[in-house]
Amino acid sequence: MIKQYMSAMGVEESLYQNGNFEVKTPIDGSVIGKVTLHQVSDVETQVSNAKKAFKEWRTVPAPKRGELIRLLGEVLREHKEDLGALVSYEAGKIKEEGLGEVQEMIDICDFAVGLSRQLYGLTIASERPGHHMRETWHPLGVIGVISAFNFPVAVWSWNTALAIVCGNPVIWKPSEKTPLTALACQALFEKALAKFEGAPEHLSQVLLGEAEVGNALVENKGVALVSATGSTRMGQIVGPKVANRFGKSLLELGGNNAMILTPSADLELALRGILFSAVGTAGQRCTTLRRLIVHESVKDEILPRVKAAYENVSIGHPLEGNLVGPLIDQDSFDNMQKSLDNAKKSGGKVTGGERVLDSEYPEAYYVKPAIVEMDEQNDVVRNETFAPILYVMTYKDFDEALEMQNDVPQGLSSCIFTNDIREAEQFLSDSGSDCGIANVNIGTSGAEIGGAFGGEKETGGGRESGSDAWKNYMRRQTNTINYSTELPLAQGINFN
Ligand code: UN1
Image: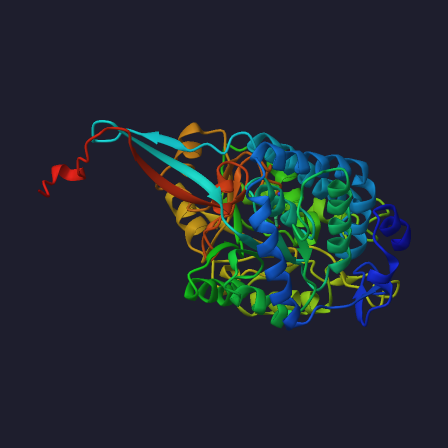
């Protein structure tokens, strides 16, 4: 199976069959590939290759750079099914979500192509006669991308499509849990390159490895920007290391996303919003709905319906029409059980959460998504567990709900379901949700690529994907140009 997809995408067998690092599918725990990991010493080689590529690529006009990404978008359209299925095998996503992830890649390519003609700067009014001021944007340098298992291909594309049109080469260290999809993306990038003239070698490189290889990339002074997606713990290591060498970082870390469900809400809509956001991707999105803050008058109406919907959700092989696939591995399952135990100890009432299909798949971890009713938002709730656990808490007045929404260390995504315009606008106001993403009558997950994606506090502060996130991949320059025959000084200083 894997071979069929890999060869369709042009990945050489030697790259994923002869290595000594085993890649397992979360679907049944079997080995689906054997790759060779890079060594720490390979990092310097890749960085110096990338630096050479940078010198050439930055001189190619941006719209022409956009043409390469247009071709990448075409190749992705051609191989959407192959790559989508591979995402399912390697990350355990259901078919629809694997395809959806590839669609995000295609969308960001389209966005980046348009952007390649719109890397706009500013003209600024100068205070001096005969002077012009401008602000211009220039390619930044080597971009290091560190990505997580749960969006094994889209996160690479958000960074790479923008980095390339902005004039930069990319070195990508994917999660060690998902190296096959990374090799496939690299092969697809090379297919696009084959149709393009004038690109240097090593514009895109893949660096396979574990923490020490990632660390070498983070510490390498030749990497201008490190864009890292993963846990808050990882970000706490990466951020200070990059800052210490005055590099730039773009961090996309944990989320603890909430929905405020108000008395005026359309409950049918809310139910669907809860279901996709809380159990979709088996709770393994950084935008997964983890907290339901429901008005006390609505709880008894909505909760039985949520529980019934949870009972009906089909769990199983992600490519056989189910809605919930496996967790990524045993660690993930163990962490989920630990959080559920802690929740129980602190008074939580747990429904679901148990392992299922274990006789059919003894080496894989399928679970019933869990609902945990809590009396209060305690530290168990404040901690992000990357698994399908939805904590349910009630509120009395709206200010209390807002307070609870913001009273967690993370600040990625949030939403409110209401038909009351005052509540909706307050939620979106300066004193409302403190998250990078705040939605009305839409769940917390499944953001479109056109907006800036990311969040505040322990989420790391970075923004990638749409809006003006491209500015992360460029350096800003302020220019003052004197076209007069005088040399007036700013601030009216007389220096004669
Ligand atoms: C992630 O989980 O790392 O908004 C990214 C979403 C997707 C991206 C999630 N567009 O759910």
